[in-house]
Figure 1: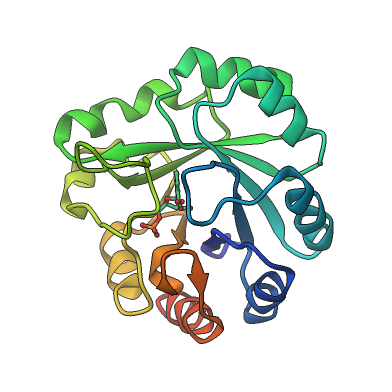
Figure 2: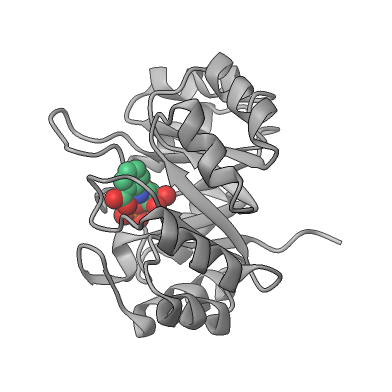
Length: 215
Ligand SMILES: O=C(O)c1ccccc1N[C@@H]1O[C@H](COP(=O)(O)O)[C@@H](O)[C@H]1O
């Protein structure tokens, strides 16, 4: 039987919103641990959120170019996944994966055909690939900016590579994204918020409903 499309709601900061995402049918939730993000949560809050998610929905902690002590501290909390959203090389991803003992999702920025060509370097280094919009020069963070990229760039990607899609997805465009790109899953943060870092239950429900309806 074909696996249904994975829907990830990222940047959750409270148990209330975690509960809303679970009830709405999310497969995966993401928690940011990156000081410059408006969705940053502390290690103490991560511990609470991961334990509240355990056995109900897959949890994923998003880190940006973490050092080994950060990876150890986060993996000790027992998330299902760590998402690496910085400039980590394939070699560094492999090293983190070997030491962390949790599955690793590697986010890769896409802005041009040359970025698509780099994706294969990470296949085998990470357990899953996430393709996100390349941030503009001077952006203060590498993701969570609510900007999308030209999905037609992915026409040159090896079709045997499974990947999740993110970058500027919203309840209004998620069905078109799924129809066009046919990703393994979709990931959203800004598109289910009313302001940076402020998630909205109704937008979360609408995103999941529209993603499921797209098949
Ligand atoms: O959300 C952030 O602030 C963030 C900071 C640093 C790295 C990644 C971040 N977010 C992730 O970016 C993608 C796309 O987000 P959006 O839907 O375009 O807002 C997603 O995985 C976020 O969790």
